[in-house]
Image 1 (cartoon, rainbow, N blue to C red):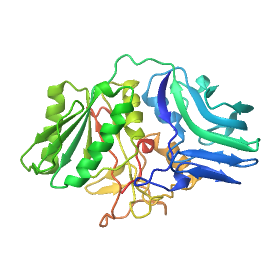
Image 2 (cartoon, one colour):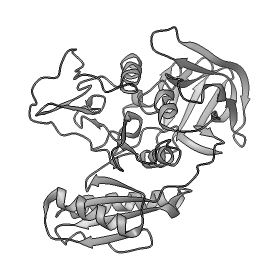
Image 3 (cartoon, rainbow, N blue to C red):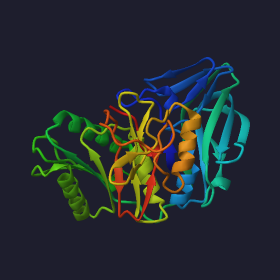
Image 4 (cartoon, one colour):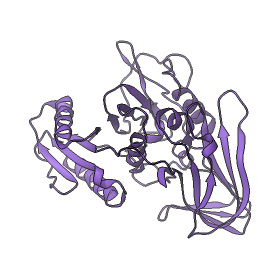
Length: 359
């Protein structure tokens, strides 16, 4: 089985807005140290959230797979429910059963009837505790599909005299690659415009001292080096980018299963001051760059799901949370950075599920 999307939980230093990960009702708690939810009898954990929805519309339109499964790990007696939300119709509970979760055996739900082109909407899981204590330790959406070929991905960072930030980012990437099953196909490259980053070369990381030709020059150098390495895709990010490492895993598998080998992905940005607030999920350009979905409250399931419906279809007109067209651009507040993943721009998927909130 190939993991398409793992459930993720709040992470200190990235984002701890619980409502972006899980909506909890009743007596329940979350352990930051273990990433585990504990539910007492009658409590409910619902994953209709920005980071843990499964966007059928985007996966089905962009990727080729004919099987789909949801898995949950934990312990205790619970009701597990899977809801399919689709635009312009009543939402449907497509699975509901009472189960005994066992920590060493993921509970699997076959959702393959919803895999395939033309099926839109989002799926989300919900767990109701029926025993005295139910724990949730993980979950994922997965497929039995096998990619025709695995991407060779370069993660290219451009930096200029921000030594601490880039060292932190590279260290996090190296930690991720130690565990990611497809790490052999991913390489990190650091284009050092200041020639001061102090990044050591390793099996997974290559530094490239570079003249200071600005961000564009650094990204161009990164693309050239990725081509020399034989990479099929190049992910560009700034030196201070903070995001869940799961973003890269999801992006990688999306590209591996992409119907179009020239598919491209672009991330979104969340306001760094208010990490529940969307800054930009795509943009509209008419001489000026106008952010889409600016101001949208990512704590609200209704707003998040409506955004998913809209962004899964053709590019929407400029939108703000207040409605109507986005105003003329104003100075940007501090915003989180999520990576933009670019191949030849034949098709573009603006995918908020790949973006994260971070400082």
